[in-house]
Length: 115
Length: 114
Image (cartoon, rainbow over all chains, first blue to last red; front, side):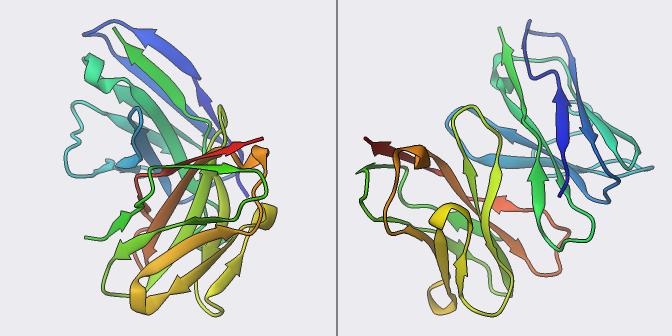
């Protein structure tokens, strides 16, 4: 299994500002993802965070809005840029554990409210 | 692209009632299937998973799910629910050989009345 922590756990931000969310894993993992869970909705994949190269974004998400860094196999950041109220969501980091096929583990999430 | 449908958005049951939550997926190839649970204020946890073999899968806390390939379904069941089962339940699909990006259903909120 993998234990994932995220910082901050929640934040309230003003429109037009940016917030960087950190994801730390207790072991080295190959696959790391960022998801968004909007109020009352399911999880939507934002991007795959690739170590040492640019993230792979899903349709509807762009690097300018959600820049991602992954400097090593245990850490990643997601920035929500130029925020608007529509960005109010829970943002989750997820990893695929080493030695186990297909099982994904999720972090506790960062609850973001944009006013 | 694959998709997942959970038809029940909110289910309300009394304790000891039996539970069945529907999950259907659309994808033509081989898939791996999952049920995740999110208890109030907690993060997503894996309930059970199907990779291959016996289509009846048993998970934690007395939950089980049956994969019916002909119906593209993976329904979650529990014979007798408890108040502590109150949570949101998500079905997810992962096509075999994909880059491990799960596609989630919209979720079902289960409320169990004491």
